[in-house]
Length: 177
Image 1 (tube, helix red, strand yellow):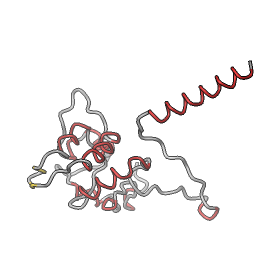
Image 2 (image 1 turned 135 degrees about the vertical axis):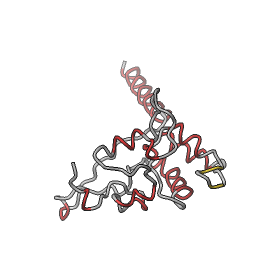
Image 3 (image 1 turned 90 degrees about the vertical axis):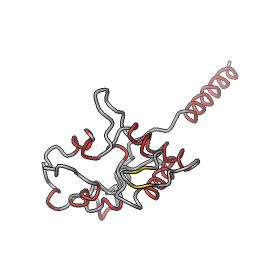
Image 4 (image 1 turned 180 degrees about the vertical axis):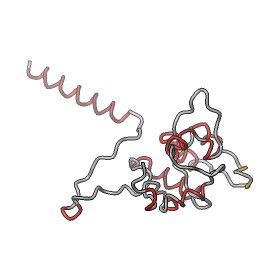
């Protein structure tokens, strides 16, 4: 009886471990790290858009290396997955001829973007500009935006945008409703 119970326990542990290994990685909430005693009153700064699991770090780095070297790196969440699918495969990039990513970098970047971008709603046209994105508009409900928002205008409110930090805001927006 004891041997049977031991075998059942071992089988359950192996099955659980196997399922955990086979599950596709997904975005997870960052685990809060304990703060040093000297900074207990201040929350820890994330610094970037969101913390990504280490399995997506290379994709994020390649994305920033290839995209943010010419303009501000736009967080994948701002545009739907279909927008990104078309952007990373097209050599015509907003009027400029670029060299599209190739395998294996394309697959690594795509895995990162696909995981962290958002689905496109059924009634939404594919947005190719930041100002067309419903998510961007939802994040900026009380901000009077110019008619056409460009990526360079992000830095006017997000001084860390050039470092992929959209959480830091200028003093004007620190405590804005």
